Length: 145
Image (cartoon, rainbow, N blue to C red; front, side, top):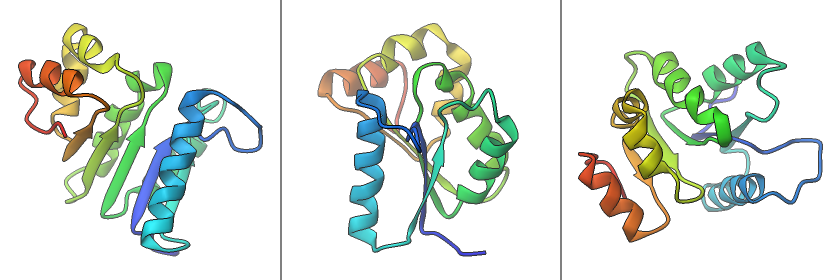
């Protein structure tokens, strides 16, 4: 099995044309990362429609857990994907990263304490604005960039 440098887990919406911001940013992020690292270095896991194919999602996440993995969860996926990735990585020294899309994470993390504890285990949370960074730091996040 090929060893990838990065695994990107997000809503790619493979096989369908979509104009939603979530899938566009996820695709652009993975494409830019692969352009920077070289062709064939990024393994993509599509989380859209995960409820219909949960075993495919778990298998994809396990395969994507190389030395570095990035998640870009969409909508309700934030209730599943971070926990699943942290659980499946186990005790291995895998650096997990979360790239945010939108500005809702600080309020959401404040409301859902379990999610906040889970996200604090990530090597980095990459936010879009300084306001988001400051809000997460007020919630005791030390891993926000």
